Image 1 (tube, rainbow, N blue to C red):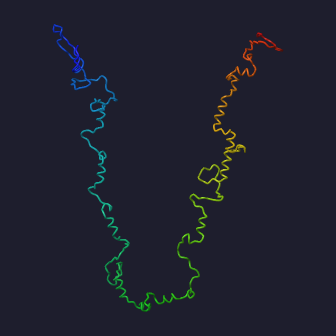
Image 2 (cartoon, rainbow, N blue to C red):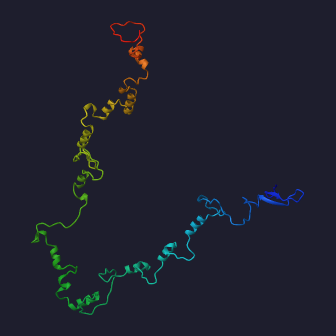
Length: 346
């Protein structure tokens, strides 16, 4: 075997030319003999992978191999060569079409620039409110129809009618524009007017608060509906027991609620301060009691849970005799008086 360090190929010699030299050199490892990790190679023949790449190994870069499943999935979302689209499939097409006029269409007044302003400057046919100095054709003399009468028509009609005894020179001799009889009535004293009513109803009118004597002071003494600042001893109806609304709570309502809360507690325990004192002002009273009880012996254990039984027996003066079996009692020293013995040793 020989290794070519130039192209990193491993060769093996085959055959024998009779002098111990190989007749053929075949590459079996390295460039040309297997797939190289780098460089350009030509791969001949169909290559079948014994292990199919997993979906987690799908191609993500331009040089990656693509699995058929990945390729099919990509094609599934593509349109065929011959296909159609609805208007909604084309971004912005419907909006663009909405801004176009149809072949046969109409316009609203707002679509015509200045049309509404021009119409606002015109008089309607029904009950027009004309301004300025409107004019119209003058009707023929003697016309008695719904045609508009101009000032010229009226003046001509009055001239043809004749003033008769309505001449101003007859009834307004001083030419001041007021009939002489009216001027005489102006000078009649109130007492000289006969048939006048005893009282006159006032005409419709209004007054400000300041024109009504005492009204502002009376209003100032009243509480506003919004956020009143009440003084003195204001009262209100007492709400029903248990109410939980925005209704005002009276002292009677509060007293009843407090009485319900303490539920007949004795006088020495009917305030929070008294309750706190009864608990020794200990905010962790329950924990304190629990810890205290934890250091006590269990009644059901019958002293079996004593941590130091020998010390307990010594404190009670029992000595070692308390731990001996009833059938084998050993007594050392001392004396025994008035005891019946049955078994045991001394």
